[in-house]
Amino acid sequence: MENQLPGKMEMKSIVCTGCSITRGQVSVDYVEILRRRFAGRPVTFTNAGVNYDVAFNLRNRLNDVIAQNPDIVTILIGTNDANSTLSPKNSRLLRFLKQLPVIPSPDWYKENLIAIVQELKERTTAHVALLSLPVLGEDLDSEANRRTGEYSTIISDVAKAHGVTYLPLNERMKSYLQSQNKPSSFPYRPGLYQSSTASMQHFMLRRDLDTISARRGLQLTIDNIHLNCRGAGMIADLIESLILENGNR
Image (cartoon, rainbow, N blue to C red; front, side, top):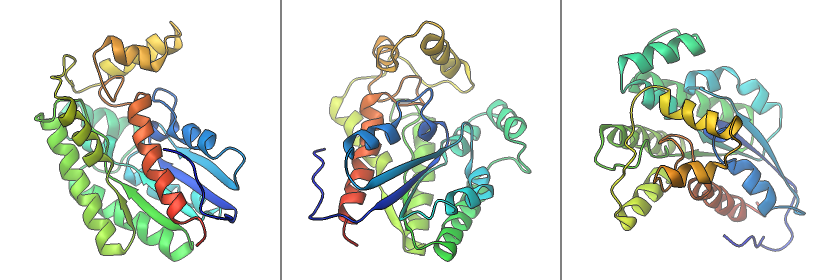
């Protein structure tokens, strides 16, 4: 997307919250893409992504977000919540890694997401935007992607009920995959194996994330969870449009 700010833009502080997809270590860093797009402009970006986080974890670290005095907060959280429900092994591992008080569920996710939105609205003047979830794997008929749709419906409902912006990432990614009509040759499998092998290729063999993605025949992801340049660019496009729309407000 071409970066054209409307007239003279006041300084804006944007905090992008989320999990590893936002952190950008084993996923193309969409926050860095945004920094490059707005280079030389009065916009600052804070990356508030933490690996393996679920909505509960983000809720518990909102003080750090609020301390940034943000003008815009984007929230991309729920991939780990949704992924954990796809197998008991996923659920047990995530609960252990993040010291969760309960087994993740859609209702618990919704409860935490509402609390995040309410606290940001009460304690900041920030424009809050919720992104729907990226795809899990690239087979649109899979249980994993039906789950991303279910969680994205929760996100949409929360956004409408609490008067915040909804950014349709899930819909945009699924529309793209539909238009390409290329069956996935690298199906999603529960567990850490696909992500860990991508991490090893990237950090040990120094392979570019897009190269890993291409070798696996993937279009938006590198391991069915984390994103390549095209997938991360879709997030950046949505957030860029939000910033431009709010440029002079």
